[in-house]
Image 1 (spheres, rainbow, N blue to C red):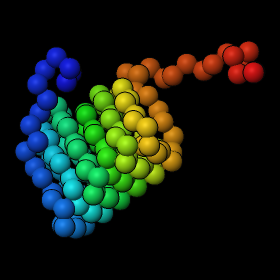
Image 2 (cartoon, helix red, strand yellow; image 1 turned 30 degrees about the vertical axis):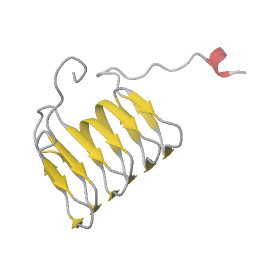
Image 3 (cartoon, rainbow, N blue to C red; image 1 turned 135 degrees about the vertical axis):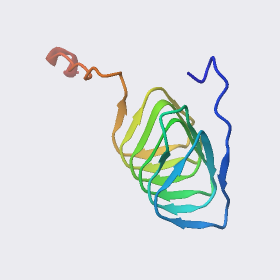
Image 4 (cartoon, rainbow, N blue to C red; image 1 turned 90 degrees about the horizontal axis):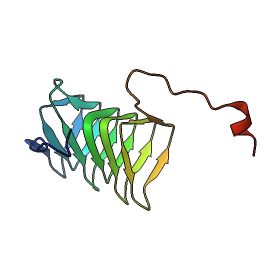
Length: 131
């Protein structure tokens, strides 16, 4: 989606020094540099991008088509297309992703689950599990 088409513009900024309590719904793209206690997600099904800066701490679930994290998220993360974890990314929660790029230094404390369309992930054969 984003490789061949232009990414949605970052139309919203919640700047460093702000503190938000409550859910945030955004259109197209948003950059977060502050502390948020609440869920962050797109307002509609149009392509979306969410950038979480190094100074940001989000306590709540985040979702978007493309998510770039260099800050802290304490909650579930759902990146339908692409999740980029930069070196200072810290996630405490389960993560769903379409594609994943993880830089050295990023940390996840939770389950990683790829989004494979509507099909459940096939179970590994028993002989593949023995080492």
